[in-house]
Image (tube, rainbow over all chains, first blue to last red):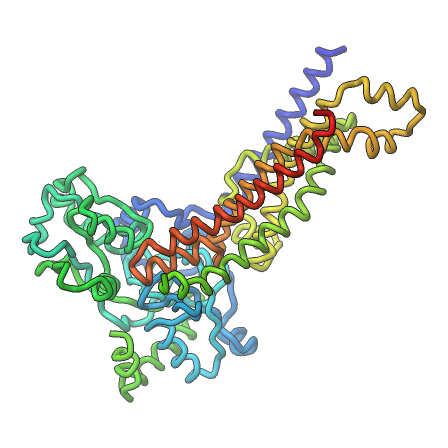
Length: 301
Length: 213
């Protein structure tokens, strides 16, 4: 009696496992492989395949894009902007917990002119493209660097701010050129465009102390590592690094002469929202022409 | 010191989210866990096997992954939930599975003699469970339940992945903005205080239930 029960039980489990496998395969086909799961190598691979992909939403490059159109957004009355609220000074929280920042101010003005209410939605930065392409947010606007890899998943406006990936060390380090980083421990924020920028020089990276950069979840952690001497240099967004060292005392740090390249920040939209993208592009052009763009700049930089 | 005071408001608003997730999860997952536990020891095969599968999935995949799947993946099968709702739902389903196993262990550890004694006294099955078995089970599961509750306090920090600003994230925001580690120290103290309080609560509960010692 007992062995008979066990055999039936085993068959039952096998059937259930098979069902589970089929369901999970179906689900993974839906969810797709282009998820930003936080592995730094993914960012590098994305760049490698950057072929300047055209925005063809019908191409099966991953999950189906869902989310409101411009007309639906206008009817609804509001647009949802996703930002990582840890990213000072582009979009972050002040001590009273209000969302502030250069991007926040710029966006507020743009959407005021467009007649659409702006709703700010904090998100996790590693999920930004997923949030956009599943319609949870309608725009990514948060010091979002334009890269070929990201272009495959979203469409960018014209660049609205330039940025550089700079090398920062403690004062007196003597690091001026990229080659000076050979033999040094270099700290970088993971999932950032700084990684892509640095990886464009693989022969230098190979000769870092440890053969690769040391990764940190946020830029400030990389900079703390630099301060305590565990890392010799940090490569990161000029925008954030300058903001950080200003708070800590600029004279303690040194920014190298050479850098890892210029970058541009853009605003990310779903590939199905071409009209929304054009609307925002036009308004920013307007703001540059009438001086309000410069006004926001001077407030933050 | 004044710096710490200045960041407290922002941290406390993060604490609100942490508490919300914590309380809602406990309120729903403990009763659900009890129901699932009863299903797990049921003699009806289909109930038993379904429950086992549910427990396997919820315990067998990372909570972080479950949060992502429920919020981002479910819409593809037609279930669209708000951030809050999807986070709470995931937590309740996940923790119910763990509580179910704890309760099952507690229930199965009650020796047969208790059931026999109840039968001799002519008590119905439901009566037996409610008045004889359950009180003893509660006594036995208090330590592991306390453990889960404490784990839950810290697991709440995972809701960052769907953009909810709980305590740890609030600390990270302040840390990043002010170029300092102090906010994270404060966050650590907050967690310590909360868990310290619960440790004490469970100590007292266990004492109250140790009426045979």
